[in-house]
Image 1 (tube, rainbow, N blue to C red):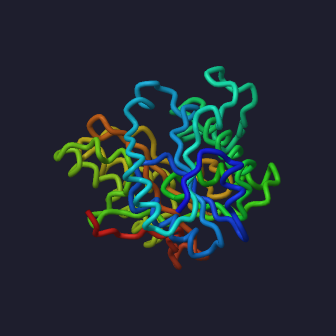
Image 2 (tube, one colour):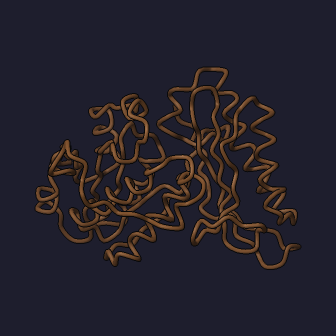
Length: 297
């Protein structure tokens, strides 16, 4: 694996079809599953490692974001990547420390959920992803479906701005007890780690209710919230949203995801399940974007 700092160096080393996996580092098995997918499907698998300051509203949150480049590089190489791009700030922001004059605004699909709770977050994500698409020119890019709204944002970014890249979603990878893997999980103490499982437990309970014919968004969202609150967590939101445009739904009558953000102790966790109505209510639902249970350390 070659480690480079610039887009030009990465392009010079790339050949054939290029698969891209953007990351912010401190990788877990969810990221690695995307790297393996890119390596399998591409002639050149490129991974980027960049903690994007534009998507952090709180400077302290940016400062405490976990980082371990040497560890990440070893994991990425083991997963089969050909190129690791670790760009300097000036590669990403030529006029740093001046804020970039040009950013990418994504309307409508960012108004609710994370967009409501994290001002400017998706503009930061979309700006960096657009730069990666333009600078590295991938044929295909992989993003985890655990960040459901982000996945829709990136998919629409590629479509609406005519980037010649196919955006592919990777399944959410979970611990054996159901907790979705996240770089932020390292901040959970023992008691909070136990309580955090209520997030996925609530989502699975709601999915089971949908499978038995429940279609009301209020009911499904309430199932999730009740589970988390019973465990001592604080819910930021639970939303049944359209898979195509992230609009809030009153009923599960189309492809959708049920998304949640909750605080357990000092840690904010997000998770979701993707749901596909299988015809009429009596025929239940299909889970799409399935989860992978991971039994590793």
